[in-house]
Every structure is written in structure tokens, then in C-alpha cells.
Image (cartoon, rainbow, N blue to C red):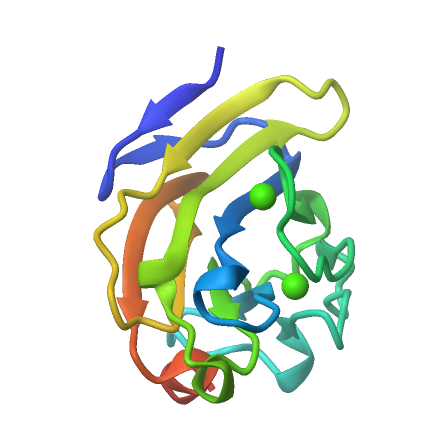
Length: 184
Ligand SMILES: [Ca+2]
Ligand SMILES: [Ca+2]
């Protein structure tokens, strides 16, 4: 059984190879145009900045140079239950400089389409063992967003040589650019 986390809660991840599943549902009819959410990953060093540009993994850069993080591809609609986008992680391949992996979800062309996380429902992040498929943990984000166009769903960080997950659930109004400014 997966452990269900609340916002701010932390939990150890004991599997070196796991998959991060991200899900959401949107109501495109409320905005009149297609609604596309995108998962991005910032792989950070001790200074809380990406190790190099290629350590920003998203739909246009699907794999980190060390092979530890792989985005499995862009989902354009979010339709249906279950994971809409997935990221495969293999911590045994992680560069020794890696100390944190941040998972951010943004709305594609949010400003032009007048969309925000106030219109997103049923969003979650879950982690399962890639080899066995066994659930490890899940965090269902509460629907307390309004004008945010980017939300950090969670982060995975190294503490005393153990890897842990934190359920973050904090948004920013400036979209992906806010996170690029923060982590680049
Ligand atoms: Ca997408
Ligand atoms: Ca969905």
C-alpha cells in the first residue's frame, strides 16, 4: 500500500529505481482552448542551482546527461485517470553532485490561454518501484490554488546519504520562468 502524504510531509524512498507519476484533470471548456500541463525536473547541486543547463529535464530535453532522470514524453490533454506524464529515476546513475530533484508542473501558454491552477483538478504525484510496480507513496494536492501557473509538486533530496521525498505543493504566478530564475 502506498503511503498517502499531506502537504509538507516527508518520507524515505528506499528503491533506487523508481518512477514518478503525475496526474491532473482540466476543464478546457471553461477557458475555450486546449489545456496542456507539462512536468519539468530541475536537478540541483548543493547550491540549489541546476548542475548544468542539460540538468533541466522537460519535454524538449528528455534525459539528464548522467542518465538518472528520464521524462517519458509529453501528454497534451491530461484526459483520463492515472498518470498523465511520467519521469523515470535511477539514483544509482546520479552524478555525485546531485543533491536534489525538484518536480514542477506548468501550464503550457498559460498567459495566452488565460489558464491557471485554479482550473486544475485531481492533481497528484506518486512514486512507485519501477521494477515491481509497487506503490511507494502518493500526494494528492489540495485544490487551494487560484492564479498560479506553475506548481512544485514535490522534491527528492539527499539527507545523510538517504533519499527522501517532500510533498511541496507550492505554486508561483510567473509560470516556468519563475522556476528557471530560481534554479538557474
Ligand atoms: Ca504536457
Ligand atoms: Ca488526467
